[in-house]
Length: 373
Image (cartoon, rainbow, N blue to C red; front, side):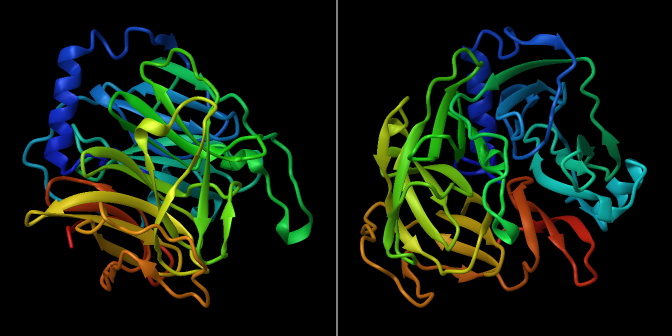
């Protein structure tokens, strides 16, 4: 899912956190201490001061937890843990086929990695938060006595199956599909119970009031129509020209811009589709990085590998408003990173590496830091 690496470069993000600490009185001042209860653990993101944002999709809520993991990393070597799914399962007293790793994110201060895990595969699966320390050791993060706050999302879809047979789904599971912290706000993508179901929310942090979401509409070239019900799968925020934009990727695979300033309660906005990257494909995770004076997007996908997309022409990109049939591509181009096979999740590890969760040929999941491509 989406991530803390939303500013250009790892160092710039760390500096942003430092500036926020100067001007904010106390990011945890309004948190209460006790047990942070989760019904599920989905997308993750880090905010300032080691605060971890956890998407509880079943409850349609965001839980902010002060991890206390705020010690700056020093002389850290690139992390690699082979068969991380088997090691997590052993830690939880079960087998690898009985867990799902829902998301992975890196604490930009300590560089410890955090995993959102489901113990079990059915509706009664238990959410668990696992920390992978920079030395490769694993531990369960206890939530019994922590500082935390909670934001309940209004207008969430009902927690009930819809459809029949293989097409049956539960919209509540997509109440939150990705989230990120940027410019003092928590950005949340997902579905609502409104007619225009696809939404982006911009929630001030620390949490006070959560208002109605912004409904978003896009033109989907591969489908040849405007859509209002398909959820954003992953997103980042990024400055295009002088304006902060949310860059959102959807299934089949349009890349769409939304001005951050347009995300207002109850508004209905239309995004600008700047790329069609091929059909029959689901985007999984995305980040922004800078290399040799240029800025790139990395987008990992279910069937088209990891795409490296230059942002050079993004400011002047034309809007796609006509069908793009037969799996063709249009708009911003990309190159496929051939060596990065099987990547499900990724996040910035340091200024030179990306931490990825990827499946090897034997089916095991490895957690490893790879040099920026």
